[in-house]
View 1 (cartoon, rainbow, N blue to C red):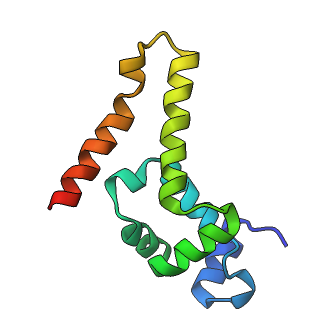
View 2: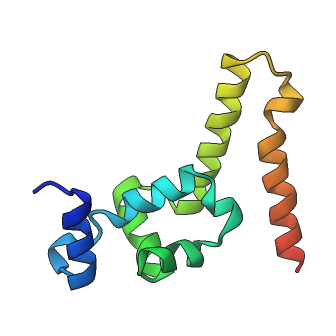
Length: 111
């Protein structure tokens, strides 16, 4: 069974159990890769997908064997690695996206 957008939307609207966990992790991974987790919380991403954050964490872990936060951290590290190896940026410049996230995360924690 292919998971084209029309089928996924119909499954979402019908809450079809055959699709449980089949496309939510992929959609969440796309949002995380687009750096949405930096701007939104995991709860907000789950809300955009129409599921609970608990279900998203469970489905994500089953699909990718890591938590959504670990996936986001890995994506940031891979971006920094690509910037170091594929561009002429200095190491400090390549780590800027990671540092910006770390500062923002600390700020949110203190709130």
